[in-house]
Amino acid sequence: MIKKEKIVIYYDEDCPFCKNYVNYLKLKDNYELILKNAREDNNDTKIDINNGFIVSYNNKFYQGSQALEFLNSIVNKSTILGKLHFFFKYDNIFSKILYKTLFLLRKISLLLIGKKSKI
Image (tube, one colour):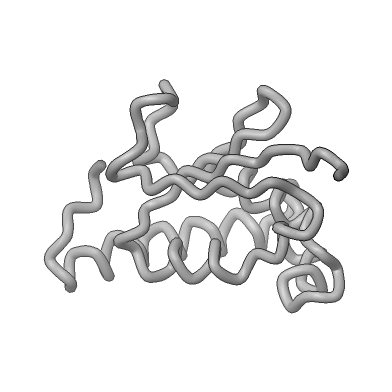
């Protein structure tokens, strides 16, 4: 049995955008994917999850649009997210605007369902 590299994703499970995104990731074939609900499991990271979701890989942390770009760079290229990878380069202005828009929509959607956006 081949040992898979571990990726830990801290995200807000109450956020519909965050939850759907992590459910669409197709990384389990190549990586040991550990999903942690930041509302429950934020003790083992010193990074403020309120600035965006966090990815931990090989002792490095990526947050917000950098986390999005990292995940899209390793996702299976045959998936929808993999095919859209070129849109999510960190140095791409589209990626930065998209992430900020999704971040704002997260706050609005949580407000509408009666959840606090701060964790």
